[in-house]
Structures are given as C-alpha cells and as structure tokens.
Image (cartoon, rainbow, N blue to C red; front, top):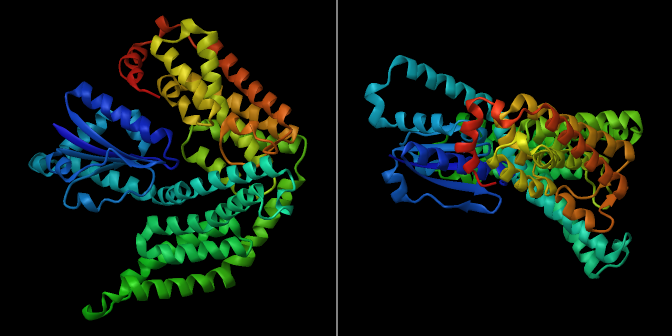
Length: 476
C-alpha cells in the first residue's frame, strides 16, 4: 500500500522531522510505501505531488499548526497531533489505510463512534492549534530580531544606537524592526488559523494596535482570536445576493472586520491589558533572591515536562514576551538554560553509565550533545518515550535546578534562541559565568539522577528491544 503524510510542529525543527522519520521507519517495517512532506522552519520539503495523491491509499496529517488541506478535497484524512506520529506510527498508518472510501463497506458502528470521538478531540485541540500556528510564524521574527540586536551590540558596543548609520546601529535597528513586527504577525496568523486568509487583515491590524498601545503579547493573543472568530461570524451570518458575493473576501470582510478590530483594541482591550502587562512587568522586576529562584524552578519544570509540547511552548512564549530590544531578560535566560539541560543531561548519562544504555541509545546520546547545546529540548524525546518514569522526573529535576539558579544569579538573556552559540557574542548574556554554572549544574543533576535510577539494559523488558530495533533507526 502507498501513503502520503504531512508533518509540522510549531517551531518546525525537531518534532517535524522526528515524526517524518518515525512514519517512514514504521511504514517500511509494515511493508508499505510512504512519502512524507515536512513543513518545517525552512518551508515545505519533499512536497506531495498530484500523482502521489492519486496513488495514495491513505493520507496522514500529523501537525500542531494549520495545514492547508484544499488539495485533499474529497479524500479521507487522518489528522492528529505531531506527537502521535512519534509515539505510535504503526497504529496511525493502520487507521489511515482503513479509513479510506474503499473500506467504507466494512465500517461498523464501533468505527463510526471512534471517528466521532476523534473529531471531538480535534475540536478541543482547536485553541491550542490556533495559538501554535501564530507562534510558529512569530518565532522567526523573534529569533532573527534578537540575534540582529545582539550582533549590533557586538559590533557597535553597548551604546550602538548613539551612532546612526554605522553597521552596528543598522543591524540593531533591523533587529528592532523584526521585534516590532512579531506582535502583529502573532495576531495575524492566529486569526488565519481560525478563519483562513480573510482573517489576516483584522488579525494583523489588531496585533499592530497591541504593539503600540501597551497591551503587547497578551493583546495580540486576544486580537488574533477575536479577529478569527469575528470573520467566521461575518461569513456565517452576513448573506449578500449572489451578484455581490464576490465582494465578500476583497471588500466586505476586510472593511467590517478591520473597523470592528480597531474599535475593540482602542476602547475595550487596550487599557485593561496594558494595565495587566505593566503589573506583570512590575512584579517580575521586583523579584529577587528566593522569589526569583522559585519562578525559575517553575519555568524549568515546564520546559522539561513535555519537551517541546504545549507546556514547554507556554513557558517559551511567556519568556519571549518579556524581551525588550536592548535589555537582557532573566525569564528568557532561565527558560533557555532549562531547555538545554534535558538533552545535555541525557548525553552525559550515556557516557557515565554506558552499561545502562543500548548501542542505539548511545549513538542517540551523541546527537543529544549538539541538540542540547543548540537549545533543542526535543532531543530528549526518544529516551523519554522508552522509559518515561525514570527519564522525565530526572530531566525535570535538572531543568528546575538550571532555571532556579539562573534566576537566583540574576542572569539575563537578550536573544530568544541560539543555545551556547550565542554566549560567545558580547553583551548577549549578563552574569555569563554564573549562567554557565547554572547550565552545568542542571546537566549534572539530570545525568546523576538518571545514571542512578536507570537499570542495566539486560533488566529491561521487550520495550527496550523494540526501541533498539525501531526507534533506534531514527536519525536525530
């Protein structure tokens, strides 16, 4: 049998390609062919063609962001979160093959009930999926803006903005421009995820207002959801004669939705959310010592809990919202330190306790060094999937230590990503040496606990054998 699939995660880095590999390995083991289109941070790769669709016996979309499904019109699609493809790709392939119209005659009541349950589960995921779509489009602006600001400081010094026209000031200003765009982009693509292209205009306008009236990240979230559901309401309830239907997408919807969003952001959302933002900022600025450490511990636990999932992304989104051009954020520093620890701690454990890991796990551990150093927490997923009761508490403990120490030391980070590679850029990190100590301490705690609680390979059940035979084929 032949299948096609699309994988996509909010950051477009780790989960996207791990899910693709998992599906490919599982399909090969089951004797099927599969073509997986990855919609990652570099765009769509291995794109599904019309011929691929004609020959496909099953279609899978494993995504946590909005995926355009117009090319699949008339076909049955199995749509799941991206982690489902990593966790149980064989079951997903079987669902896709049995769900096609050719199998309709054999569909019984149980299958129909299961389909209804799946649809209800998908609807509950809607808000998270819309949010992650907005975040996935926002992240490149955040990363590019933060790194350009850091490069501007590295070239032009801490007072780079006092030298207009210089290379350093130009890079600094370019980074600030990217930062200024990230809030409108967030609002626009949350709205797009809800109501497609007609919602881009009101979503971006709402996001722009949020970036100028002080409501910021929270205001953009509200604007995106408000714009998306507003456009859906206009399309549903505003009925025009057939001769005027062509005006809906190009005139009526943009005009009405933009006007309503402007009024909403100025008279309803702006001042209350700006007040909340200021109160939150004042509270964060007042934190020091024990209180700061507690917040760092909480953020660290969130980073390691699901390794790139909703809880992890919530902590990361919160941290990026605290970034201000020209200033280092303690929240961002704690989150990046905590996010680096899980893969680094696991990598160190595979070196310290070699007899407790299979050959495949030791190879995966080598990749974890690079993934952890690059702030890609998802590198820990294969290990957590095979031994969650030991791995997840171990990495959470290490991340909590790293996050807590980072906040207690008063370390700050001016960029939203980059791992150890941005530590080499001047003025990017405050309290650099204590910050490195926090990361090393968290790594040591995870490695120590994991090396102690793991059992030798021979003591594991068939799950370990399955990991080596199937999961071990994944190329991180």
